[in-house]
Image 1: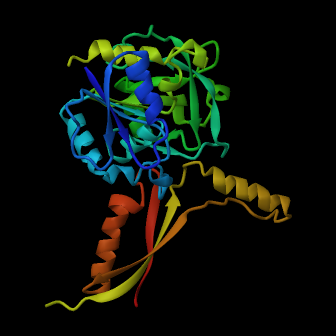
Image 2 (image 1 turned 180 degrees about the vertical axis):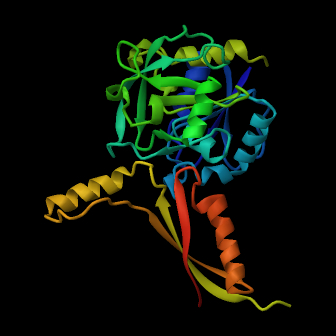
Image 3 (image 1 turned 120 degrees about the vertical axis):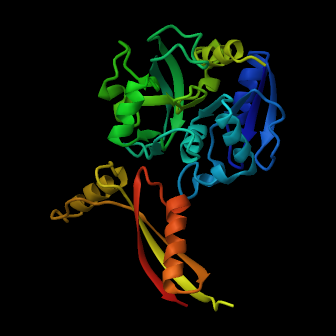
Amino acid sequence: MKFGIVTFPGSNCDDDAYRAVATVLGAEAVRLWHKSHDLEDVDVVILPGGFSYGDYLRAGAIARFSPIMQEVVAHANRGGPVLGICNGFQIACEAGLLPGALLRNADLQFISQPVLLRVERTDTLFTSSFQHQQVVRIPVAHGEGRYVAAESTLEHLEDAGQVVFRYVDAAGEPVASANCNGSMRNIAGIINEAGNVLGMMPHPERAVESALGSADGALLFSSMLSEVSA
Amino acid sequence: MTQLTRFRASVRIMPRRGILDPQGTAVAHALHALGFTDVGDVRIGKNIVLDLSAPSASGADDAVRNMCEQLLANPVTEEFEIAGIEPL
């Protein structure tokens, strides 16, 4: 099982993602350059956080045209797993891999803090190591993380069980006060209908060891390691 | 051979109605603080001006519309309007 972490100009969480899978998990991992057309036989692609192309026009809007993204989209369309974290989630939405969009946080602030998430699905290849409805602590760091979609899209996401993570309070309830960026329905992460593309605003790669304040994010990477066959 | 003309196009992109525009809200509050208490809803979008060659104004309009649909605006959250196409 081999992870590939894409580096766009302006990515800044690619090292953290590489470290999470290669050093902490001990998995095989390679870095993929945005200008490359070669996915180097990776099994899972990680689109990391950052500010690709300076967030020009809209966050993620330009990264979609990178040479590597054509291969990532083809990989996803073949059923290959893709994990989009933060800016990677924005890119996945812009590239049409996931529905909806991420807009400026409701309070206009850049939010960098640990948040609580409820794991809504444990039958995905990204979340099998979590407990059902487990509340986990994972940091967010974004200015544009407010998930927005048409009402019909939201209904479809809910009906199909595509909401994987929600911002919640300590009791595990998706209350307004726990909704750090004003996302519709407290959505922090969604999966595509086929179940192979997950996008999330929080940063699991920043929560993979207790020394980082939480090791909850490691469960996401270990899920992939056990669920994805090489 | 078709003669191409240079055009300058102006595109206005606005957040869709019904989608929270926190920038607009913040500016409305600031205007109220300045004493412009009659100000109601404020929304903030962007204006893109681009030059292009096309056989006609309607050809330029078609091209710019395509650009908006494919890149310049995000249909999930934004509406666009071609505000002007002028020969250069």
